[in-house]
Structure formats: C-alpha cells, structure tokens
Image (cartoon, rainbow over all chains, first blue to last red; front, side, top):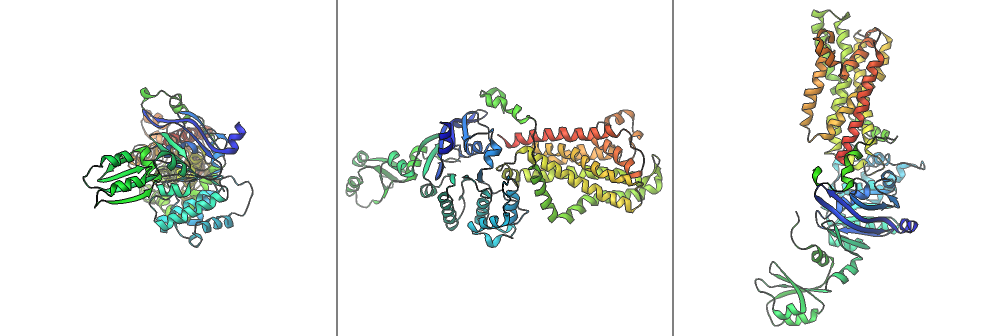
Length: 308
Length: 274
C-alpha cells in the first residue's frame, strides 16, 4: 500500500488542515497528485492554495492530517524532499546583485550535487530552454518581468526536479510570454516531470492541466479532469442574452438554469436549441450561444461575490 | 498567536518547535559563499565604509587627543585607542551587516524565501549569515590593525593572534544582530539597536579609556558586555602585553556567539515557518 502510494502519487494529503489562530485556512483536504502530468489547484484569492503549497514545501506545519510528498512524510523530511522539487514562487525572489547565470550558479550551490557534472553547460542549457541564453551575463535588474519569470523557472530546474511547483506562474505576463511558458511546461511534462500549479486563470488550467482540484475556503469542492469537471458540474451549453432590465420569461427558466448578472441572462442548459427557439419570440435581444467551460464550473462552485 | 483560541496540538507545540536545538549543515557555507560573491563585487566601497569611521576616530582622536593625554594605562594613547578600535570595528561591522544587510536579504529582497525552497534550512541560513558577518567584522578589524601597524602602534607579532579573535568577536555580535533582524518590523527598528545597545558599548567598554576609571558599579555592569572582553583580549595582543584571564574573555565571547545563534535561529524560524 505504501509502495503503491509512493509510485503513484507524488503528493498524498489526507485530512490536511492548517489553522492560524481562529482562522482555518486549509480545512481537511484530501489531495492526491498522481506522478506525471500536470495537476492544477484552482481557487479564488484566499482559498488556501498558497498555504497548501507551503505545507507541501515544509514552510508551513500542518495543524492536522497527514501529508507525504514524493513518498516522504512532511514536514519531517523537508530537506530530502526539497532536494527533489523545483519551486517557482509567486513573488520574484531572484538575487538582484547577480547576473542571470550567476543566479543559477548560486542557487545550484544550495543543492547537493551527487555527480560532479560540469555545471556551466547544464545551466546554459536551462537558459536556452527558457530563451534567455543571450542574456546570461546581464544583471537581473535589467530584465523585463517576463524574462525574470522565465529565469525563475530556469532556476527551479537546476536540480532536475521530479516535481515542479509553480504558484501562479503567468500572473501579470503578456500573452506571448504566457504561451512560451505554457509550451515549456508541456515539454517538461512530456519528459516526465510532474507539474503542480496554482492559478486563477481558467484558460491556463484548461490548456495545461490533466487534472484539477477546485479549492475554496480551505476545502476541495471538486477534483477531476477539466473535461469531466465541465461535463459533471454544469450544463453543457450556455446561452448568454443581453437583456437589459428585462427578467427572463418563464419558458426559458423552465429550459435553463438562469443567472442574471448585470443585465445578462446566463442560461445554462441541456436543451440549447429549445432556449434559442424561445428567444425568437423576443426580437431585438442580442445573444451568444457557447459550450460550457471551466469558468462556468468555477463560478458555479465558488460563487460570484468579489474576493479581495 | 492567541493562546486561548488554540485547540490543535500542533498549535500548542509551535513554540517548542521553534526552540528545538539548531543543527546546521555544511550547506551553510553555500550561504556564506553567496554573500562573499556579492561582496566581491562591491568590495571597495564596502571596505571604505567599514574602515572609514574607525580610521577617522583613530587619526582624529589618536593624534589629536593623544597629544594631550600622552599615556593611558601605561601605554601611549595612540596604541591604546588603536587596539580598542581594532576590537570595536569588528563589532560595528558585524552588527551593521547583521541588521541592515541581513534584514534586506530576509525581508524586502526575499533571498531567504528562495533559499528555503531548496534543501537549505533556517539553521543553515543563520549559520551562513553569522559566518559571513564575522568574516566581514574580521576583515575590518584587520584593516585597522594594518593601519595601526603602519603607524607604529603595534608592539608585538602576537598581534596576529588577533585575527581569529576578531572573527570570534564578529560571531559574538552577529548572533544578537540576527536575532534583532528576525523580530524587526522595519529598518527603523535598527536605529534603536544601534543607539541603545551598540553605541553605549562602544563608549563604555574600554575602547577610549580603561574601564577601571568608571565607578565600581558600572565596571561590574560592563563586565557583562561582550565588547569589554573583546577589548581585554585584543589590546594586550596588539601592544605586546600579557593577556589576563584569556579563557574567561574567550568564553564570554563564545557564549554570546552560541546563545545568539540559538536565539537567532529560533526567531528566524518563528518568522519563516508558519
């Protein structure tokens, strides 16, 4: 049983809890991240994503439950486990006093190096991987936000990790950089690295993740493949109707689950053609018919109120 | 944390967890090395800063006051002052590094967060930082020692024994400085530490005049301060006199270094491990 867990799951959390004083930030989650592929933790701000990651890394001590990472108990085995993990934190913590390649060199020095392989060519290959090879000698202060993020990703790979953990890897980046990062993460995944990421971008989750857990208020609300989540949690079609101040007519309410938000009816339905036919009786309404997506699942499960 | 609200055993255990004995490993030298690499780049301005102030004291007070004072405690005033400043410059440099620079790495620059995502533990970070603060303190003490030698204030080749002692002095002040950084809410906090703790030691612990010239009660009080023992070791080695009670002085400095390390590790854990 233990051997099975070690081989199959890189992270195995059972009833994991974290409290800060009166506040329960992680409230008894069961989380199993299979080896290989990309696993996403999706949740609004303050859902408990970052605290969960901190427990996985040994930076937060669980208040209850059990947690093993790469088959080892956490936080007890922190040193050994972190030797096999790469971390891309939410905040940039590159060393501003060093050049690009020095950042990697110094960071590599924090890991045990079993074989004395020549380090520099390996580090240059990492810089090539994130398209920064031509900036190797530049000061970190002179890099753009997207370059810094790519350097943080390269830095997370200096120990050739089995598990790469990324906390909101593409927040605040422009589309070109996001696509580059996504393609690199897919490449890592193809090479067998397990990727665990937190995000609140649905598009990112849908494109990258093989499995997703939607987490809110410290609990896991749903966990499955993105496709299965969409199929299982919401109706397959959405008709969005710009309706102004009008209220949805009863026949549409019978055909669909209607949410009215800022003068738009969101009609979640299994019978889109019937809804569209009903709409013909009300000329002048603008509408859009689209398949349901992960965002619908997310909003259904976590609600629409603002989280600041 | 509000003790009354705690029900989980893990929460109750928390203080004990922070105060568990530190067990640093050789990777602490990687932390030390990181600081050396940064320093190498900024070496000249950094040395000038660490060196400039004691150098001014030495020239200004040593030559200026020295002319009127002549001898103090049986030694020429210039040599008396120079030997005191060799000891205090290690204290000053290690303390400045241990508060301002350490805090910069610990908080705004998030250097520790990066390190703690690797096999490096807080015990290693604090050990590496202390070694580095002591290295810097030692270097600035050596710089003053060289000037003092050039100006004829060094009376014996035993002055070379000051070098390991300067390192120990650096450690004795690095530990408390790191502990202060670990609890500091912002940079402003360090003005209190420097003004209320370090500067009084600089004035009272025998750098400028022998502690025997103070009232007896004050003499007893300053015996509890590490700089007194640092000066008591360094001065005779520089001037060529026999060191009295060397083991006591070494033990006090080592004690401050050890307790400072332990407290600093516990407080940095409290800041970083939630």
